[in-house]
Structures are given as C-alpha cells and as structure tokens.
Length: 508
Image 1: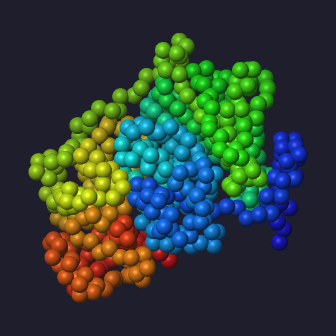
Image 2: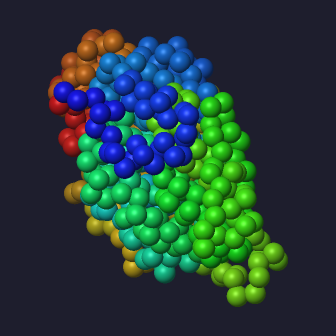
C-alpha cells in the first residue's frame, strides 16, 4: 500500500516547495510518520492536575494549550467511561489552538459559526463557564446533530445550537456578538497525514474552490461582530489563497478591522506577507501577525490562525457602524427560576419544581468540586422555565430571534408525560455525585459501568440497596455516576436499577 507521502498531489508538493524552500524535504518526510493523537480535558468536570493522575492513556502535556494532552494512538479513549461522562474530548492537538486563542470573557455572547462536530464549541462553552451565551451553528443540519450530542455530553447548558447559512444568521441576529470563531471549511491540506482520503478530494476541490466561500462566510461573520469585538479565523490548510489572502480581503473591504498579533509558541511560524491587486501595502505588512503551524516543526497537523478586532464606534468611519440587536431584555413569555424557585414556583409544574429542588438541595449541602456547581447554580438562578409540548426546558434569559432553525435552546430538563417527570440525559450530564440525593457512584473499573453504557439492568449489593432505599423518593430515580461524574439515570425497581441511559448513545 502506498504511503501518505506518495499520494500527495503533485500540484500541492510543487507549491509547498515554493513556500518552504529548503525545509521542503523535512516537511515531506513528516508524512512518513503517524499523526499525533490528543485529548482536551473538560475543566468544568475534571482539573488538569487530576487528569494527569486519572487518565492513564494521556502521556504528555501539549505545550500550547493548558488542558491538552498527547495520547497513545492505540489508547481506546473513545470507549472509556470517562469519555461518556464528558471528561474529555478527543481532538487533534493543533485543532485545540483556535478556541484557546479567542479572548473569551465571562458574560460574552459568542458565535461559533462553523461549529460541527463540536471540538472548538465545547472549549468555548468551558471558557464561558455557565455565563453569557454560546450560539453554535453549522449550515449542515446532519452535522449539527453531532454538535448537539457533543455539547450535551460536555455539560454545556448556556448554548443555542442552530443549523443555518451565515447570511441567514446575519439577517436575524445583526450586530450581536462579542466574540466569533470562524473555523472555515477549507481544502484540508493540513490534515492530509491524519486523513489521506483528503488528497483525492483536494484534486477535485482545491483552494480555488474554497477561497470565495471563505470570504463570503468571513464577511457575514464580521458584520455580526459588535464594535470592540474580536473574531478568530482559522483553517487547516497551508494555502495562502485560503489563509492570508482571505484576511487581506477582510482588511481591505472592512476598514473598521485591525489584525492583532497572536502569541507564537515554540515551532509556530509567522503568516506569509504577499502583495496583489486586492491588497494594500499596510495590510500585506501586518500579515506576519498571523500564525502558521507546520507538522514538521511541531507535534501537530497543519493550521492557520488570525485574530481580528472591530474598532469601537468612535473609531469607525461614517457608514460603517452597526446597530446591536436588542435581544438582551428579560423574557416575558418564559417563567423565571430564581434561587428561591422551589418556594415561589413561578408557574413551574409542581413535579418539575420538586425534582429541581432535589438538585438544589443537594448542591447546597455539599462542598462540591471544581466549577460545576457554580455553573449549575447560575443556570438554575437566572434562566427561564419553558414548556413546549412534553418537553421541559431552561432557556436563556433573553429574547432570542425567531425565524431560524434551532436544534437546541438551553438545557432540556426532561419530559412531562401523564403526570410523571422523566429527567433528560442532558440534565444528568450537568450533574455530579454531590448534585443529587439518590446516587449510584461506580468506579470506572466496576464492570457494571460498561453494562450500564450498553443499556443493561444493574444489580445492587445489599449495602447499595440499603443506602438508596433511605434516600429514595416516590419516583425511584437514581443518578448513575462513574467516579463521581454523571453518566445518566436509572430507576430503582425490585432491588436492581432499570437502565435509562439514552438509547442513541449506548456503547455498541
């Protein structure tokens, strides 16, 4: 079977020789090596220090992100119970950089415009830490379904997931977002080693196909960025046409933008300055502020990054200002849940209010770990209850615009059927063992964890049954955890646990 190097398109190799010069042989030689595998830790559920100890397949820290680890390629990280509990995301090491370099602040309204399958969106959600709002979008509804799952497993509640074209979002949201990430669709040159099938796709659809699309997407994103906001543009390609030329286009057509310098880690390269009929001298000179990652210089695949800032209204030339949409008013149709929601109820069905009170009571009676508890408390205290058919939700405390395709708005609490409340898988992923009154907490080495993930009934010891019997309420609901981290729900029945793990996520 031919190697990845032998399958590289001839046109690509010729262009890289012009781009890299005497480094070309080293660049081509790296395609004889296996790509690096990595995981990024969910710091809302597990500290990086604890991950060093608990994750036996993580072998070494990644230098450019604080919560990233290189991992052995033969590690079965996707079948470990911790993966199902959302303690980490499997991600190529270079791909961890864009979300880490966008300067997120608490309370920001953030857009991940091309978000599926969710690697970057999960990190943005972690950095918001339950504050503000993350709108995670992908134009493909089928790809966006993976986005829903990954953000749910991550325990990200302050999110709206949409499946719309960028132009449609611009028409609806207007100039709304503090921070935007555009990880643009591209020719994928930087991933040839990770996915050799991309070489054939490149020969059919090269940089010349993607560059106009990237300019269109970026133009929409810039117009959705509020004055003073920041936008990070990234690709996984080496093509100047898709990278620096797109940034130069943006600077030329949107004079309210400035290109900010990015801190360059060891082995990172400057952007490539160039001149063309569409680029002024000032824009071309600043392009070295961009970051390029080459796989022969670092332990990661190819990537490009650029950070743009929109000048404030006072610095923007006439005709370039934008009106920020007024979606931040308190909602009136939804019912607010305050810290005293269990006493005042605020129109929430009693059975739902009582279930949430079990969570709130458990939070209040425990020291807790990390920031999971604070994030959950914030959601319960500030978000609004809304019921759509049988679905019970907590939704953002803003008027969100209508007329676009939402796949998820906020946190699905569960369903209300025939007077019974069934808590959702999404709610379980927000909890840990100290956030509920009836818990079966299993070690990751307990074979019942795998049986639970496969959808099987769990048998209990006499001691476990006695403990649960003391804490049980009438609905018999039990939170199943692995080493303290929520996995899903079960029902106590006849001395065993009936499995309520979401069928679509079960381990095959």
